[in-house]
Every structure is written in C-alpha cells, then in structure tokens.
Image (tube, rainbow, N blue to C red; front, side, top):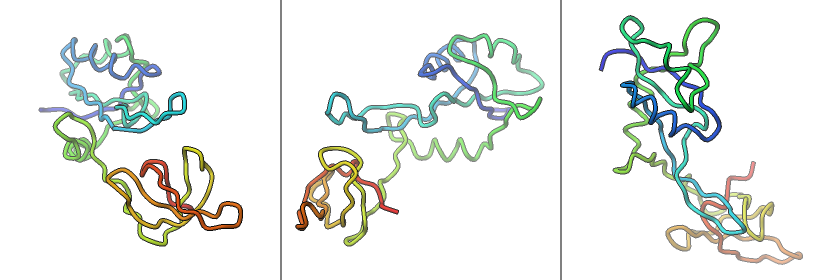
Length: 167
C-alpha cells in the first residue's frame, strides 16, 4: 500500500455510491461507518451511517495515479484541497479508525460512562429537554434518571442513547 490518504467530498447521502464507483475504477477508498440511533415517526431506530457525512478517504500516489477521473465519478463532488494542495490525511488516523471497527466494518465507540449523581439532559422521547440526575443503568440499553416533574422527584427509565451530559 503505497501512497497517501486524501479526503474526497461527496454529494449528499452518496458516500457509498461514490465509494463503490471509485473502487470500480481501481481506486482504494475507505468510508468509516457508525451505528447511530435516529427517530422516525416517533420511534427510535438504529442504523448505520457514514461517520463523516459527505466525506470518504481515498488512497492515492501523487506520481503514478491519475486523479482526473475522481471528480467526474458518480457521487463525488471533488477532492478536498487547501488552496491548490490536496488535503492529505495521516495514515495513523486511518489505522486508528480501522482498529475501532467490529467484524462488520462499523466503528465501535463505547458510550460515555455516566456516574451516579451526574447531571444529564434527555434528548429524545416524552421528557425531551428535561435535565435530571443519572441514577443507574437499568439494563443493557436503558438508564434510570431522577427528574423534577411538577415539583416532585420522579424516576424515569430512558434509552441510554437518549441522554447526554448536561453542561
């Protein structure tokens, strides 16, 4: 694997299309993926999406590779540049991302460990916007949070992905 990694800017939601078309042309590319939760019609769904929306990495050799077909590849807008210089990415960064992948090629980042007594904010569900106190984990993907509702302390169980640290 000779060459350096560079950053490619893609059309909206076409990172996978761009990756597939670049690889058909013989280029080596890398698109880090991430599992994420999102709300669709009131339900929380888990899906896989690019870690960096609209960007992917491509391995190129400045002396031997032909860069001109890249910008006309379906799904690609351009190679990211700073002035006239293509934006090179350190090989160590790509190695770090690859080391964090599971067997499916999806990034595995451990969720922040919440400590009892920590202030948290609820980001989705019926209590969205409320701030409370983290009490405990109540299962693999659920936590218990102590909230002030109508002047009373109320315990609520919410998805782990539905809280964030309150600043």
